[in-house]
Image 1 (cartoon, rainbow, N blue to C red):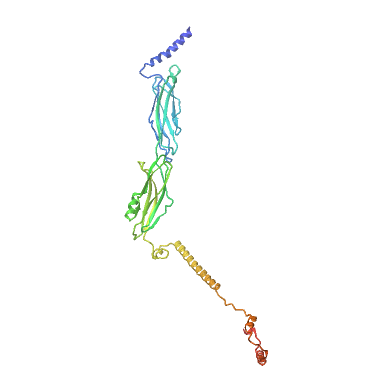
Image 2 (cartoon, rainbow, N blue to C red; image 1 turned 135 degrees about the vertical axis):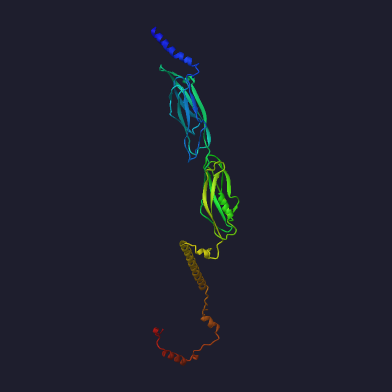
Length: 378
C-alpha cells in the first residue's frame, strides 16, 4: 500500500503540471518554432564565380521545459546538395534558441532552374525539472516546417575567337573581312551582339572607311552552340597618307542587363595609297623603309629570277640548234651503173689503138718528180 501511494503521488506530480500547461498562456508542451532568413536563395553557377549559398535558420523552444529538437532537410532533385551545421539534434532550454546554418552546393555550368526544398524541425523529447522525466513528443506532431526554392541563376558567357588576329593592311578601296566565331558558353539560350566598339567605328568613319552592311552582327544561340560570321570594312576610295586605326571587336549578351561579361579582341586597321612606280610592287620611296631581312629576301628572289632566265635562254638555244641539225639535207649521189651506161652508149666503138702510150709515160714520169709526202709538212 505504501508503494502504491508513493507511485500515485509521483504520477500526480507529473500529470497535473502537464495538464495545467495545456491551457497555460505561457506556451504549449511540446513546442518549436523554425524561422529562416531566406527561403528563396539564389546561386551563381558561373564557372569562375561558383560558390556555396548559406542561409541561417533559428530553432526556438517556445515551451516551458527543456526540449531535444532535430532539424532535417529534403530537396526535390539531385542538382543541389544540402548540409546542416551543426547537424543536431539540439538540446534547447525553455525559451532559448539555436542557430543552424543550411548550406547549398551546386555545380558549375548547371542549367538555370529552380528546385524546391523543405526544412522540418521536430521535438524528440522534453525534460521536466526537478524530476528527470523524458516524454516522447515526436508522435504528437510537435513540428515546424518551412518550404523554399533554391535557384541556379542564369549567367551569360560569350567566347569570341578569330583565326586571323593580324593587322589588316589595305590600299585604296580594298576590303578587310573580319571573320570570327562565337560560342554561347552560358547556361541558357542567349541573344548576342558582335561588333566594333563605338570609338573604333567613329575613328574608321572619320578616316573615310566604310562598312559593307552593318558594323555589328546579332544572333540567338542555344546553350553550348556556336556561330561563324564576319564584318567587312572597306578602305577609303582615296588614301593620300598612311592611316593606322586601333579597334576592338566586342561580343556581349543582349540579355545581360549589367553588360559585365564582354569579350573583345584588339585589331589594327591600316590603309595606304596604292603601291606603284617600283619593281615588284615596291615603290622607290618604300625601298628606304625595308629592313635588312626584307632586302635579303628580295635580293635572293631577284637572283633566282635572273638564273631562271639564263637557264631558259640556254635551253632555248640548244633546242633550236638541235632542230637545225636534224633538218639538214644531204645530196645523195646517184650510183653509176657501168653496164647500163655501156648498154646505152653501145654505139661508141672503143679501140685500144686510140690510146697514146707516150702520153701515159710522160704522166708517170711527172709523178716520179713529186717529193715524198711528209706528215710533218702539215
